[in-house]
Amino acid sequence: MNDIVWGTVTKVIDNNKFEMNVTHRKDENKNDYADNEIIIFTEIDIMSIPAEPSIRTIQQIEDAIKGKFIKCEIETRSNDGLTCKVFHSGAGGY
Amino acid sequence: MQRHWKSVYIKKHQKCPDLDNLVTGVIPAIILENALSEITCKEVSKKITEFHNMTNFSPNSRYVGESLNSYINFKTQYFEKTKQMDNQLRQVFSDIEDPRYIMRDLLSAIFTKKIIPAKENGKIYSNGIFRIHNCDESFPIHRDNASFEANNYTVSKLRNQLSAVLHLQTAQSGGELILYQKSWKKSDEQFRFPEFGYSDDVVNDSKFIKIKPNVGDIVIINPIHYHTISKINGVLDRISVGFFFGQSDKSTLLCWS
Image 1 (cartoon, helix red, strand yellow):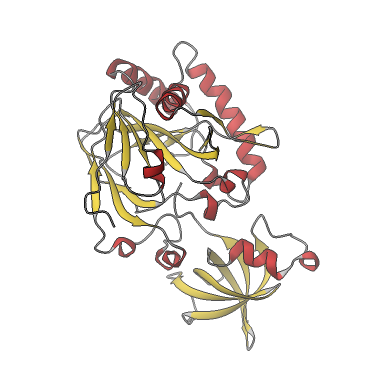
Image 2 (cartoon, chains in turn green, cyan):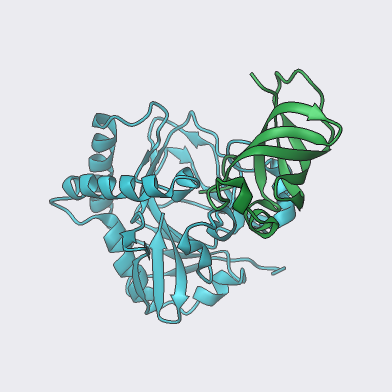
């Protein structure tokens, strides 16, 4: 199982990269994660963001996830950040 | 911040001029008392409980009906499931009127506005959801906000979002609505729980009111205020039915769940 962290998106940096304030970490995670991490996403499962990476814009990504609470399944860590799959997470209400 | 945050109580067929006061948070709630008779509520509760028990819902399901927040990324499924469920509920309420339609008519009368189900590309949103809660459940603090949470649905573009809940059966004790005099703001997302709702820290020291769920009353709130339900005690389930509604223009309210 991959490590998982949750938190809010604080800044969109590129059309595949954002900054995240990590607020929750899966109990079984094997690695540690800072309160602020750079996320590089390989997949993003958010309906309003096009599945095809080449047609995504920073604006679309900002509109869809900036300030939102999301879930990141971590694949690898590099000097540039955490490479992850990104998902919508839970709900703040009905 | 208002010093006296008091609900407005109205009777059936009375006009209510306080919709704007609810939207702006001047008042916490509008309570339409005795909107449905106890006998009707009992009959509806029986029908919905029987339907819930005989239908193959998931083991922990405490709902009958669809809620779009369960389909944030699955819009097509939301509208398909809504259509299926509405067909089933038409059968359940074949010999009595569906309480969701009664609620719509009553709200239309008190606010003197047309109230109709929201539509998107010809597809109709869910008419409302029945909730069946028992003493084993806990209720995280939450707020309801389609404009932030469900911005790929057209109801997210409405001017505002209000919530109407009709209480059909009450628990032996507990099950009160706890409504905080604190509205959600974007930075509160840091208090989110991964699955649902928020940590109690989000309402730290905020004032709140409690609303007792009297059978037959419709409780209308602005759900951007944090809210939860107090612990349910006893063997009786707390059964309610509700929907959201919002203004599309001056004279029309659109509803959904």
